[in-house]
Length: 583
Image (cartoon, rainbow, N blue to C red; front, side):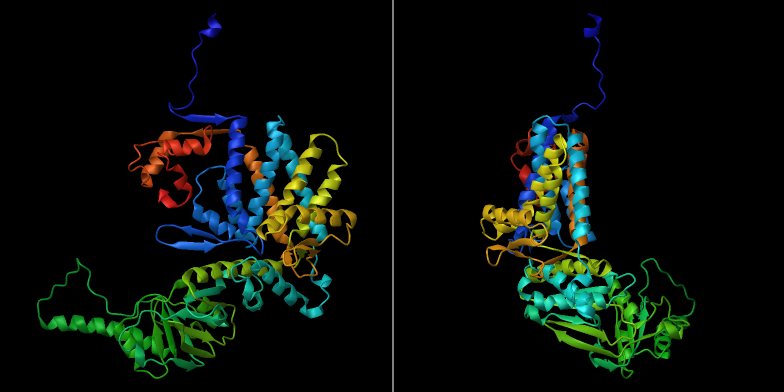
């Protein structure tokens, strides 16, 4: 009987919740599917937008990464999907919704095997093998510039069509013929050795038509805060010299604890004169460099403004943003100086034209015609703030896609064509092997079909009929039908490569690899340990404990799922997934 009287061993602090086993795994998969359902309808050229209201601002977007970021998802397993969407956005720029949906569909197909008793490691092994085959197949099918057959214009044509495809599903898709060449010109203006995206400035001006947007071959920055005398400064200067400073050009007031003791009242004037002498020496040193344009990160006061206004063809501006200063330095060849003493001649830059122009309701300063220009500025116009913000996100995706295509100019056809071909290829290989791996690889092939199916659903088409036509075409004609995908305009199928629906091969490779990794990450978790005390401390630090009686954050990580989340938070738990700080 002694074996029945042994005391239990307590490893974890009292109140710690442990969720494990198959129920925990299924709960994590269900949470990931809920995330996928949020962004599902945003896919494709007929995808819908989401309006996310945060109390003080509203965001309208169909960008998967932006939506998942604004949702502020708290479920730890579902955060894996947020991470892969962000990595896709940073790596390629486009395909954030696709990678989320593929990962969710892989998990959905895997759930059946788990419920039938298949070990997660076997499922993960099959997923990894299928993903490896899919990536290799994409590399076999990818086309280069030589396959386009346009000679020297091939790379330019490829970049424009890739940018147009990235803009197809965006709010500004109707203007892709206007913005696609603009994106290519912006990337072409950068240093080909590094293609630093920080050198592409984007300025947003509300008002006017979207076609009033422009690409500036140089730097454009918004007019900074100005003092008296600014009106007398030159607003147009040809062939100016540019001096960039990180120096404050204004009289400084004494500190609160400053104290000056004098024994003769006449000495007070000498102290004042010394201050004026110092500021005038700085201003004189700037003029001696021969510079016409003096820009500083720090304030330039009214005295300095009036001083420079007294010199012909001279302009100054203070409080210029750091990113604009860096791009001006890259464009003009100037070097930012931290002192006005002994400024070398090669620290002064130059350009062909400086001018101040009105753009909408704002004044902008333009520096154009720079000899070593490695930067540019895109000025986005639009009727509303939400439209301009979404246009900014759309152009960012297109710029990133063009950048990746310029680095690796290999493409595949979009519109669900490459996913259907990979599905056919993996299915044909799965039939040659035996055991459980065959079924898992078949489920992976079925998961890839979520992309063309969702494109059809979002366009209001019959996805069953379209997918049957695609399966038939890819199976009967593996060579000629390899690029057949969904044609949302004609409610049929077509050769999307000939229709110029092109996507970077790196986009699809990264999507498949990231989706498989995220799915395996979720499947590898069989136990979740939750410490309520640490949650309470975290929530108290975020101001989420007020009025809730110190209840635990949620039971969303196991057991009761969303039901537990709502019960433990007084029925308000779901609001945690809708905004920041439960607001």
